[in-house]
Image (cartoon, rainbow, N blue to C red; front, side, top):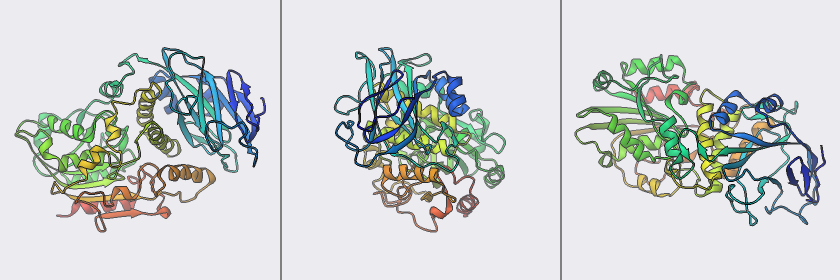
Length: 492
């Protein structure tokens, strides 16, 4: 267990070299076998399943214990960041593998890292060269009194560095190239307009039959639309069965859900796929209950009728309830911000796991594979959320569509904050520089964005403050939230 060198001199830990100017502590090499790592770090079955499904293996695992910042000791031999950092040099994965690093700090906050070149820019992990270098901005985070707590991604109380490698040819969908995410979604998350009942809303289900479509046209129907990295079965699991029964009764059984690509297709393309699933000549009137990025898909259905390819079909959106939807976008402009984006989702499910964890982690790993392989294209589903990007600029102009909009939004803080929760929220606030629900900026759900439909105000807006402790996925189990939704949807 070699000591770190606070002067920034290299320290060898097995095959890994660490430079930690200004930081004291000890580092040790951990076994990389999945069973050994699980036993040591308590990583969850969901995380291990996601890694295995995507062909990931651990190349190196290093634990740093007893970390302590040494004031004024930094920078004669500093890392490639201006501020405090850990520089990690690891063996190259070889020409047929990609590589990335997952860092978990003492408080359980997780960040994903891509290799860097000599100037600190994102580097391709393939090809020539014997080593790859990763740079991790650091702080010594406080932990709870026990010094350790379990999340989806492992035991905390120390710093954990996991170097992960994956084959550049996926055994199911082929080479990791610009169309990789699209092929992955086609294989694993195909488009589907499905039944969504109190009996099956948390499970996979059949696509709508001709008889189902005919029944849905007998009155207003309620459409559920999931968010980024999700599927309908995993997006609403905390919605109580009793609430689903109320929805079912209110709409006389006319409930449906839409599974769609969230990484590779933008929301307009998603909406066009929904329309293609409608039978010829169908006349459908919808209320929509949508979460996160699903709000942009729902707005495309409501506001872009002339681009949906309706033909002889008719589609009307009467009411639209946004739940934490990024109507003003999220910061995703370049690879650095894209890793921040997947960090948000990783930390959300790490601290607040639900039955949709594996879905989210699988989506995160799909994006990270492309980034680590140097493939930045083919992710228009995520790029559609870039603030002031082409998709949102067009969507947030004009006032098309006649539906009435409602929104649930939250500035999240835990009710009983311990230091882990503070660390989590501090990370998210640093990324956003604004109030947020851990994933989406609070005001971006409802505030002015250029569209004539916004801003939303009471009684069409229910805004939660820090005292309410409602995170990005916490609305569905919250009594006040769902009571308000029922009130909005029950208006004659």
